[in-house]
Image 1 (cartoon, helix red, strand yellow):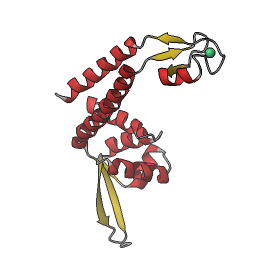
Image 2 (tube, helix red, strand yellow):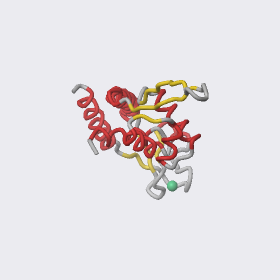
Image 3 (spheres, helix red, strand yellow):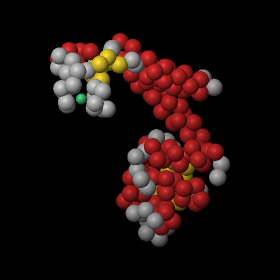
Length: 168
Ligand SMILES: [Zn+2]
């Protein structure tokens, strides 16, 4: 498997369909095939195969050729991976991640946060903590201010890394 194949399988996984990776792997092997052939090869049900192919098509990660069947007169669709589109797809995903992370970073920088020493999943911004009079909404324990500089550092690092990759 090439690093490119690896990336493509990862991207297929991101589409949120469990079977997408199986379908992409089949398509890599078959090069160009109809949905039925892909379904047979991957063992994935044909309606799922179609759904995933449309998703990939929507992202321009596969192309589709329409051929009229001489015997039946019906159109048959042949699907093929579009490797050259993968980079653009990954870059656009990274750009979206950077935007989201920057918004999160701003939020962290502009707010102070309060946690409960007893409940691990309680973390309120000042504005919400003040509403509960700095008492934990779960156990009523006094909330304590928490230092979010580590989160800010981590977020900044991830953003920097993605921006470096995008500027390549
Ligand atoms: Zn608590």
